[in-house]
Length: 181
Image 1 (spheres, rainbow, N blue to C red):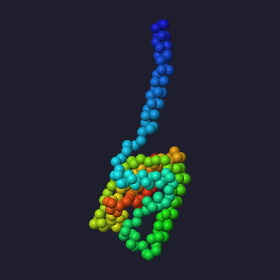
Image 2: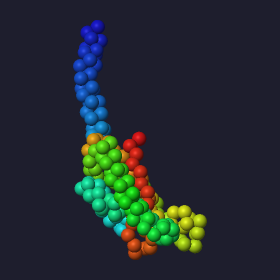
Image 3: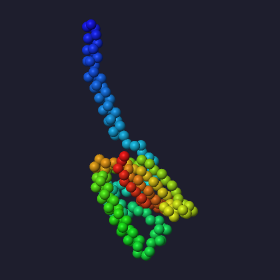
Image 4: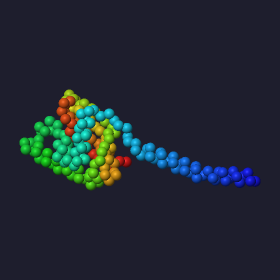
């Protein structure tokens, strides 16, 4: 009978060690997965330069740069504007950039950083008239970025960038911010 009691004491005596081991394992797993970011995506060099400039403007709250980099208007669309109305369009789009920046900052806090999750580039030639007339000819790059903000809210930022020729600069044709699921 003393043998049975000894075994029970041994099993009971190991419980704190087993619990400590599982607690250590749980902490190690959480620590290892907490710092992991999504794998980086290969982004064309000129597009990466644009993203750095765009997000640096967000971080430094440089509204003028955000306004300059936002809202593409194709040459065909520009030619359709009546004389003098292009400036009104610029004023309204600049006002929209300010409103959007203020809303995102209010909801998410100050911008801290980003990484690119997905990127897809498509070239639309002027010969593809339907697509060219709808969204413009040129190089279209669609990205999804994970952005980090000060209010500990992460967001997925969808950007549709366009540049008219290989040598021209990217500009934001459309974007959206959505709280991370």
